[in-house]
Length: 230
Image (cartoon, rainbow, N blue to C red; front, side, top):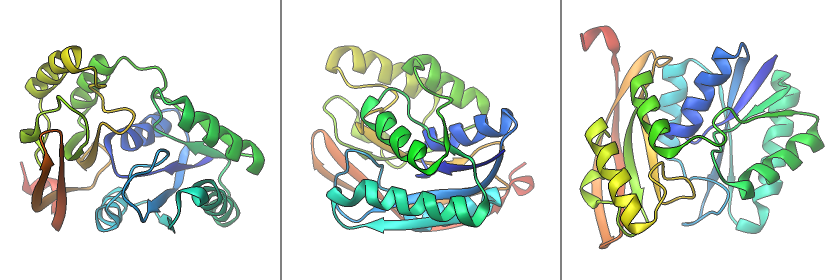
């Protein structure tokens, strides 16, 4: 059946997309919500230019909607999903939710209302094994924001490695954050994955707000054919 992925451009929604394709679903369109305020309990805040580049690399159409007020988050999601359901004939909503019942219950309610099946292939994953699985699978991602004590600011703006996973797991035991960043402790941008036709080469600027808060702003995105990287 045709599906849409609630897509932020981060590691979880990208891996959920891959899992949906593996399960035999046709991902007809990416659906992106763009909160136009700093913090959202429901959505990650994507860089629209990055998501456009990712959609091009994936060769999947992109539909998006901005939301100006946290009180309108579900209203925006309902409108976007109704649009893609009617325009592309999708029957399934794919999300990258792992452990947030706050997200899953709200997505399920909207999906049920619109007659869509909710597919959450990452639900309940163990954080450490999940991160290792991501890297083994070929999902490459940068950290773009950190908002939790204990996550090292030196990982901002660079690609995460297996040694970083080991480090994050140890720090998570000490500080109590989720090493897979569920709950918004940090956010990510995927720069490559098996379904990407091009790798994203991103340059930008880092800003450190405090000892536990920092951001990486993508300023330039270059799409590079993978065969040129061999």
